[in-house]
Image 1 (cartoon, rainbow, N blue to C red):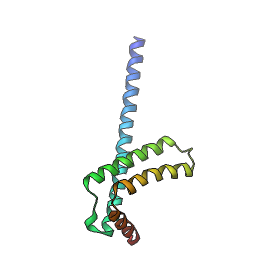
Image 2: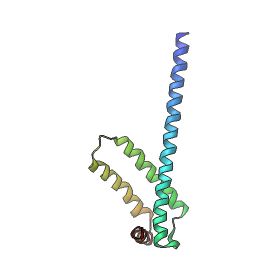
Image 3: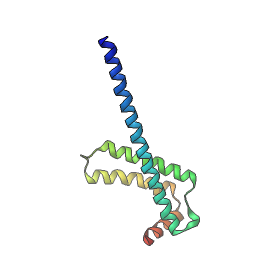
Length: 114
């Protein structure tokens, strides 16, 4: 009976931690989507014809999701310099590999308007 109770308790604990991590991933994905829209709005403010394609949006969302998860793994003990270097690596991926040069110019122009 004690073993059965222990198994049930372990199952419930693992299930609740799984649902918490699922909630955390939803929050991270929501934040990533918000950041994609922010970039898209900056581009649109610079030039409406250069909006992000759906493929670009998905790629940027994936990169932001990886970045946020990585930052959480670094933890609060990480220095500002470590976090800055970590973020720089991911933002370079977005700005150099995904966005076109025209989109980058439009984004800069849109940021200056705001």
